Image (tube, rainbow, N blue to C red; front, top):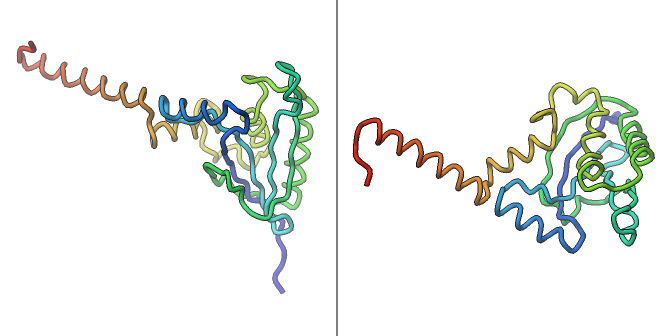
Length: 189
């Protein structure tokens, strides 16, 4: 008989926003910059006892205009969501209480940050907060400017650059080429 382990594996996931402007914002953003910040960010956790748990926040009362409340969703799933755009393995924690600790941190976050704010309190800040609550990940998760999500945005820009990034790269190469031509005294008309 095999021993059941409750080690937790954690994944960072992205899907399109589910509001009317989400797909439009994502299309514009990915074509211009290539990083796809206009995506909904969430976590998937997995243990032997709970094979797939979705942990996310969403806007609770959409009809309240600017002052929208946050809604915490912790749902056991039977399969990976079909609307998934990207999934990154964050790491594994060898702990019997990791999933419970993560869920408690999610509840604490929503209790302390009950209103949605487009810049300061959203799905990205929620995910960053939860991952930062796990000391096992502190030293080996890649970050850019101290942020896990900024690292993945930069990686996406590099892998799938948008029109603005491609233009910047072209102009940089053109400037280098022009400087080389000038340095060897070839007249440019």
